[in-house]
Amino acid sequence: MGDGVERFDARDERSSNDWRERSAGDLTAILQGVPAHLLATDREGRIEVVSDVWLRHMGYRRDDVVGRRVTDLIEAPDLALADFLSALRQGRALIDAPHDFVNAEGRRCAFLVSAQVPQGAPQRCLLVLVDVSSQREAEAMASRERRIRMRVLESAPDAIFIANASRTITDANPAAVRLFGYGIDDIKGSSTGRFYAREEDFETAGLSRPTHRDEEDDDRARWLYRRKDGSTFVGETVKAMIWDDDGTDLGKIGIVRDVTEQERRQHELEETNRQLTLSLEVLDQFAYVASHDLRTPLRGILHIANFLEEDSSPEVLAAIGPRLGQLRERVDHMDHMLTSLLDYARLGHDRTGREAVDLGLLLDRIETTLRMGGPSPDFTLERDLAPAIFVASETAVEHILSNLVANAVTHHDGEHAHIVVRTTEAGTKLRLSVQDDGPGIPARHHERIFEIFRTLTSGPTRTKRQGLAGMGLALVRRLAIRAGGRVEVTSPVTDGRGCRFDVLLPLEENTKP
Image (tube, rainbow, N blue to C red; front, side):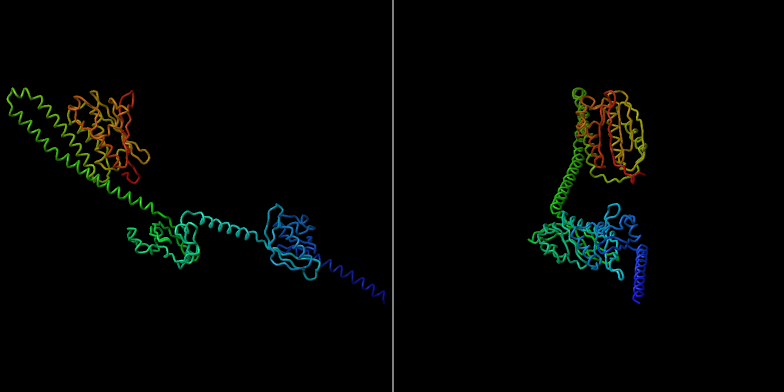
């Protein structure tokens, strides 16, 4: 009986061992096939079973990790690893303990680890791992963005306020503290209206009260602000709404820059420009009136000379005739100078608009006028026009061309002058060139020739040729500047002779015909 019991007990024990081995094998197969990050260790933390999902995720082979302590795969301080092993030995449950595991490539992967002793296997610990690497990276990125935003706020030179939907200030940067003189705790919780100037401040500053203070759509404005000490300043403000993803009004951000000095300089500049405009208008009116009124006494002088000639006997006329001729020449020259001065003054009153200018027709008119104008050398006028038509003030272009061509003809030192008029596009500019083959202009005189009544010609030529009042090139320069361009002179051009005037005028795409 006893032997039978013993044999039965032995068979029973063998059966139990077989069952436990079969159970362990079944558990291993189950754990390995579960689609989750699972590890099974003994109570000393040595890995016995690992899921296929975790192996693929970490890049290990099964033989790389089975038999190793799980703490060998965790990157953490020694004390934290000791606490982890102590929990496994004692069978204490772990819930979402954060640990960084090192994968096969040496990179860290963040997991939340939960561990417990499974029923029926008291010598084992089952570890469930949840991959939170993406979440960790997102949190780290959000943290970096918060730090960047804080540093931007702290380092920005302009005052920055953040207000909620009720327009109560929730935050401000150090520049706002410096600009307004309040502490950060005084600023937070205040209404945005606290910092606007009072009615009497506008009167003291001599400013009219802006009307856009409460206009929500106005994202840029200048406003008078009041500091804690009562002083005021003009601030340029940029505002922007803060919206939630669903369109909810979360508040507003405002940036304030002190532009008091800029405002003062702008007012001074406006006043200076106003005074300059008035002065120029007075000068224009003076030149216009003077040149117009002075021609009356000149005509009187000319009439007196004619009367003297008519009333004089032949003997007297033989004596004073040459002097009367010289007098008439001087009067004619003075009259021509006054006419040029009158043209120069009229430039300030020119209100002609921009239109399509046909240079070919314009040059035909100028050439006809010059050939009928009196004693000048013969000339040919060559044209190289590309473009030949463009949009500008026709009056201004005609004055520029007629004066430059007349200047080239009048100052030529030979019997025949060859003049080339050329147009080319230079970016956003039209280059209008007039080149001659005359004696040229010494470099030392390149600036003087644009002065009023300045001419380099002397002697008999001054009285024999027209157009020598010394106003032509001054007119050209003033017209070019008024049109937004400039005049350049090049001389000599070739072989020590010739002169070329280049007038650069604005030529925008939307102004071409």
